[in-house]
Amino acid sequence: MKTLLLVLVAFLPALSALGQPTLPITSTRSTAYGSNAKVGKYANVRGFKLYYEVYGAGKPLLFIHGNGGSIRDFSNQIPHFARNYNVIAVDSRAQGKSTDTSDSLTYEMMADDVNALLDQLHLDSCYVVGWSDGGINGLLLAMRHPEKVKKLAITGANLWPDTTALEPSLVNWIVSTNDSLAKVTQTPAVKAQKKLLNLMAFHPHISTADLTNVKCPTLVIGGDHDVILPKHTMLIAEAIPNSYLWILPNSGHSTLVRYKDIFNQVVGDFFKTPYRKTRGMAQLD
Image (cartoon, rainbow, N blue to C red; front, side, top):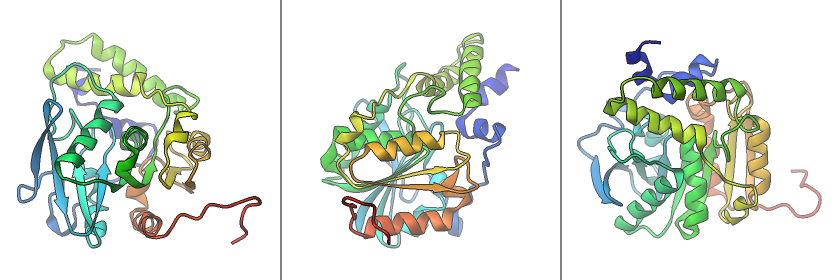
């Protein structure tokens, strides 16, 4: 593989290569989500500039994207939820417009970044939607700063990076691509990409026991053909005390793209409806 192709490797194209549908994401009403000069701002948090955009009014709702992604990945969600919420969409550290040249990157760092942003915005709590790595960040935000998360909806998250959690072909791709990147000239672009691959290759390290510290109601989502194995998604839901599980049929990793309308409806209903915890035998209705 040529160096140029290696540099341009990103997470979502990798999913496409594995047979997971990566559909085009279109902006609604011509709004350039993720590159909107009218609303885009930078917050100085924890040693770097975190880029974010704010839309709508109402209760605060935070969107956190996946590995190598950006605010743009929520182009199908932002206009829908901005009708009733104060939507805060962020570019995670070292991704999108949030440049960070440091060598290290962890999910814990990114969770603490968004917590610092919420502090700067004087928000004591919010609803949270996280996709893929953003789901991991959402879980860690709920564990490390539980007062900040009212309700959490995550799709395509994992607790650890091996083949008990991820599709083996994805694990093999991550390892082989990471090895290939180590052999080419270490330009800033290569180093930045390797930092994101290292994140997937060696992190996170969350136990099911850790998830008992997620106290907020949580909607755990996955596709039945997701690169995050459905049995792993079920494991996450079972470990969180107040959770619902939603596995979408005929869906890969891009649940909120392929099924954007029903995704928005179900997540919106989850945020609006009080959590109902079953007792004893499962409820029939």
